[in-house]
Image 1 (cartoon, rainbow, N blue to C red):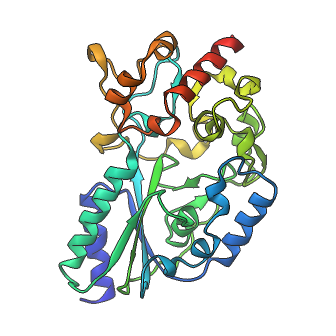
Image 2: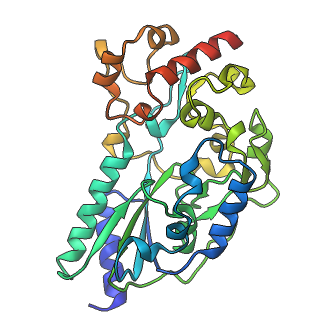
Length: 315
């Protein structure tokens, strides 16, 4: 099978599995990306996310993740929600309405990889989605799937900003992307102007310590959260302000992945229909029953309660 024929085959398989875009790049060192991340870390913009400062050698050289690695396949996963939360509920980022994406995206990546392996039985591969020290967004840009916006999101000109990224590293050669998507931000600074705490300190620069997402998910419990002024926005897990104001956010269809649909909780209500009072009264056992397989488990109930409490104090 020629590289062109294999490319068409993979693209067709990816579409049938629900992926919103596919591209491939050759494995090569990513020294510029490493330098950018090291600058980010040197300014302490990563806050308490120490993992961002670790494994720099692997980040720079993806071949360290798989012996004889030749190619990196990059897949876009669409998560634009079918419905959004009503305004009176504490806000949860839409990617977290349903199940933990790490598991079900990896599952579909393996299905895709195994389908290719039927054609190349000796093929070796590994799959990742936000689960290894890899420059995923930079690889998506190299694969021709989009550009990096001033809000630091990957932006697809066909799918918008509601996408996650899946990675397959393999030892077979593929057809590699040759065309770069031009940056579509222009003079627009809506994201920077809309961020209520100025986390976007410059175009393409994020200080996570000022970011609502960091402060409601990643920062340790008790770390100055109630002094964090942006909690007036009612966010208790993540934030999508800089995503929602972007002119490109209207692109893309709502997701067909059922796993992104809101989780059903007690009394037939969903994960996006829980009032502040109910979060504060929730016990750990109940949280585990409904959210052990949800992205919300990353923050944990104590962190969510802290965010809800601080939001209420701001009102």
